[in-house]
Amino acid sequence: RPAQCFRCWSLGHTQNTCRVSADRGSLSYRCGRGGHIARKCENTPNCAVCHDAGREAYRMAGP
Image (cartoon, rainbow, N blue to C red; front, side, top):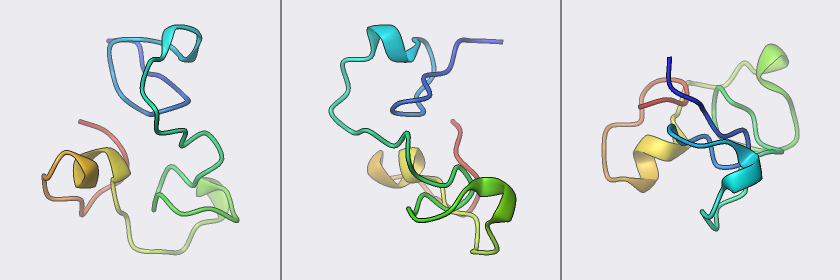
């Protein structure tokens, strides 16, 4: 399993070596919005990484 960055949610590196400007560390991993955590999230799944890359974003964060 590849390393995943908890800062930008991308694969292949960790937060210590992250060079991506997007800091998603305080967002819900389920919907990509702030103000709550994924465990308590009831919003529709939305992958912020996929959305930013121009792909369908109908699921939780991940490639």
